[in-house]
Image: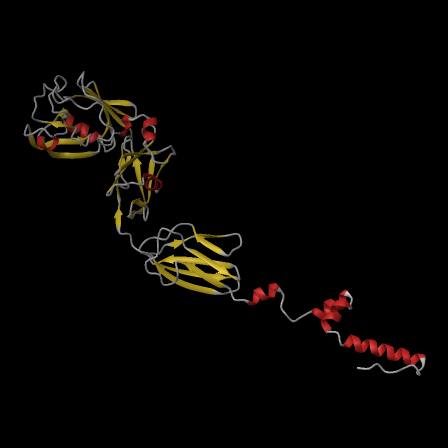
Length: 414
C-alpha cells in the first residue's frame, strides 16, 4: 500500500497523520505481542486474567474417591494382611469395619488422613462390612469375606479355668499339631500374675509350652492366660483358632518332702510342719525318681496295672486308694492297703511309687493315705530325696522346677 503524500499539509495535520500511521502499523501487530511488550505490569496482569478456578477451588470441586482393600465383593480374602482404606481428592473423616461375628477392627490414619490401616488383621472365615466417609461427605460401604484356613490347631491348657491349685502348678499348653514357628505361637500367648512376677515360657517339645516364674507362685496369686492364637500360623498352612482369656488361682502353699533314707514324708503348710507320715518307696530294682514333682492328677480310687508302665504282669490292682500322680511315666503317691503296716517307715518295697498305709475302699479317715489325700490339691509340690535314683526329667509330668532359672529361660522362643 502507498503512503499518502502530505508535503502540502500543515504541521498539525502532518502530526495527526503521523500518529494514525503509527497506530495503523501497530494495529497490524498481534494483540498478544502488544500486551506483552507494551502494557505496564498491572495492565498485563489484568489483561491476562482468565475465568479458570484456583487450584484449591478445583480440588474442592472434585469428588473424593474411596478405595478399600480387600475389594468389594471378595469372597476368599487373605486374612494375613490388614484392611486398608484410601482416598484420593480428599481426606478421610471416619472408617468403621465390623465383622459378622460382632467383632470390630480398629485402625489408624496416616498424617495426611488419606490412608487408614487396621491395627490387626481380619479374622479368617468372617464377613466384614467397611463403611468409609470422606470429609466432603462422600461415603462408601463395601463388604468382603476372608477365606477359612485349611488346617487348624488348638492348645489344651492346664490347670482348668477358674480352678485353684497349689503353688507348684505351672501353666502348661499342649498343642494338637506340631509347631514349627515357636516364636509366633509364644508371642500369641500371655501369662500374667497378680501380684506381678516375671513369667517365662519354656518349650519342652514342638507340641508343649509351659510357663512358670523363677520360684513357686505366692499363695493367693491370680493368674491370667491369654490365648490369641486365632489365625496365627504355627506351621506351614496350619493356623490357630483360639482367642480367649482364662484365669486360675493359687491357694495355700503345701510342700511335702519324702526322705527315702528315713522313709518319712514331712508335710509343711505355709511354712509350718502339719504332719509326718511313714512311707515306703521304690525297692532297689524299681527306685523312685528323685527331685521336685507336682501333683498333676488325683483319684480317690484307680486301677494300677504293671503292663502300662512296662513292667509286664507283675501287678494289677483294681482299687488303689487315694492316688495322686507325680509323673507322666507312672509315679504316684498313693494309699496302700495290701502291705503290712510294718512296712511303712521301715522298708522300700514298691515298684517306684511312694506309698502310705491305707484301707481298702478309700473310706477310712483314720489312715494316713486318706489324711494326706484330703490335705492335698493339684499343683502341690512333692520333693523326693535319697531315693537312689537320678532326678526326674523336667518334662516327665509338670516338673519344670527341676530346671534352673537360666536353663528354663533358655527354652523360650522369644
